[in-house]
Length: 313
Length: 255
Image (cartoon, rainbow over all chains, first blue to last red; front, side):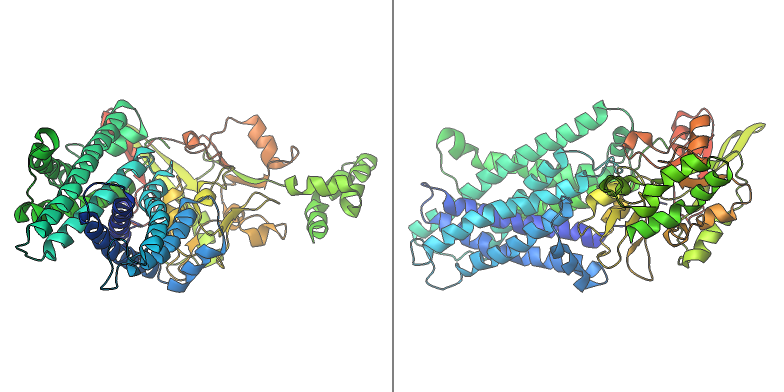
């Protein structure tokens, strides 16, 4: 029996922190973007900014209480060293602080593009995007830093976690957007909604495509090598203990199916200059699939890393 | 402080040399150590010692007295071990063997656990190369436990901190051998200063074929083995001969 030192708390933290950081990164990038998509950009940015900090804080709380001695976690801030966890916790602290401020700038009822908080909002977005990327990517570096864990010991894991985080963030924004959508007969409002939906769907399709490429590269290079890594990756290849959740929930329903649906949706506007109409069913089902896939990815990676080991003593 | 330790630690070697008849030479060598007057000695001091262990598995009888002595020495909680003995059983009748592999923290030259520790709670002591845990800083995040290729660490359920072998630092600093060495009935363990070419361990390392565990991980362990069986259960995949490893750490498999 292999010991699972990192269990569900860590898995949930990796998922929630990635989701929240991804949502804020998308929000900030959309806000800072120049031109195109009119005021619909602001709605997306607002949605992402308001969602973002909540799961990150929730995940952090779980992680801190999992220690059993919550206040010991303050020791992390006595030093900075090159441990990925040390750098990550500084990023996380900065991200939580600034993303909360960033979210506050969207809270007033009069908040809108070009109001008196606009300048501060942009400044905070410039801080939140890099620190959010830091939070999303450090978790992959943290796992990847250990030669003792051949499954994790891959530089591409950090990239996979980053893309998965951003994609989960987009999914959360889409889901919240669909959930809080106000029915309107005003065509301008509806156009805005379809515009922002197109922006999110197109972004997500690119990211999911990237995720597929990274998963392919991860498996390919694990298979091309010999020794520890190849033994370790056998856990998620057909016949391995985690093959089912990995291929069905992560690769199949978590990445591939949403990717195909989104490509079909955006194709008319992207390639033929057609009209993009967002559909409620897709706006709800696709994000839920992506979120399930994002969680299962963290689950599979964290467990597979701990049940596989180096072959030779 | 440093000078005092140095003085204590070198007393035994000093006396031996005196008794050996090389009185003049040793006196000349010992003078700067005892006085620590010159700056040259100050510079040399951090590199003064590098503790290591050599385990001759041919002399090990698999009796677990090292594990028991270690548990008694540190009051290690039930079900956890800082020092343990693995049994490797191979082959099928009549071509079979059982080999014993005593295990402990390797006090590596490049300790992965130290690299990943976010608070600096675990570090390698400059004066003797022992990897220790500062429980005042440890937060119990288990990162070091994940990072150790030897699975030498565990989370102490009583204290909530990471725990592992520390070469019996409290005994060693008083000039005693670690508890496992002291209790070994077969005399399989040799503990000492590897950086001193005249030490027993250095002599045995130089005159025996030795191996370390998982050399491919680049950790450069300071625990050496003579005639260790490096077989692992991965070899069962080839199906040529059976290997069964019993770690004697509850249900834990070797990692």
